[in-house]
Image (cartoon, rainbow, N blue to C red; front, side, top):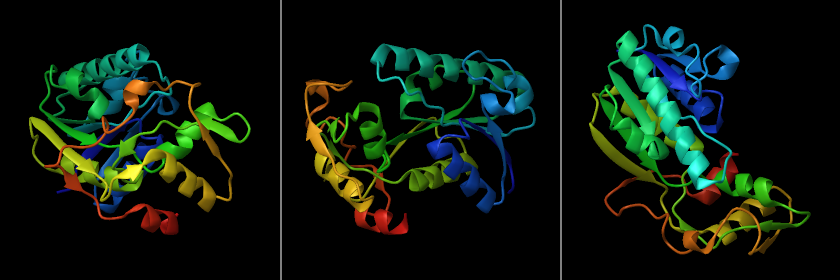
Length: 230
């Protein structure tokens, strides 16, 4: 059944893929972003943007690396969206990891996708911390998937009934983040020397803290397959 599905953050990395996935699945996506006249941070324009939508998917993001600032952003955005959704009668709210805590306290039935990091995260980190040929690349273990595959999972989740819970999705294989970053940048024709001790990352992020639960779902493409498709 075709549905009108609003995508908050529809101009971002995941949002662009998500809008495409929804169209391919026969739905009518509506991009909710400041550029389209709806600001999820202030709440301005949200009621009009969400009118007529059966589902809202929240894939908003922030560039802030400060934990308190990021938490405040996601809490504010989620509460603003859910108030507007309640006002216009949206029946299903779909969020991702960072929105989880705020979303479950809202008035609209919720499904949450908890996704591990994306392959694309490596180049984002380098962009944040690069100084010449040196960048802070934290020694993490992750199980990454592509933004495109996470978007496809979100599109499928939105088309179903509200879960009132969380589904976890990750890539097919654990990766060392430093090695993964080197491989991606090498494929892009770039050189990088990883460093530690400057930038927004701390030692409490090291090790396996970002690995998914063993019971979660996995997407099939590994890093090499993703690089070839790019």
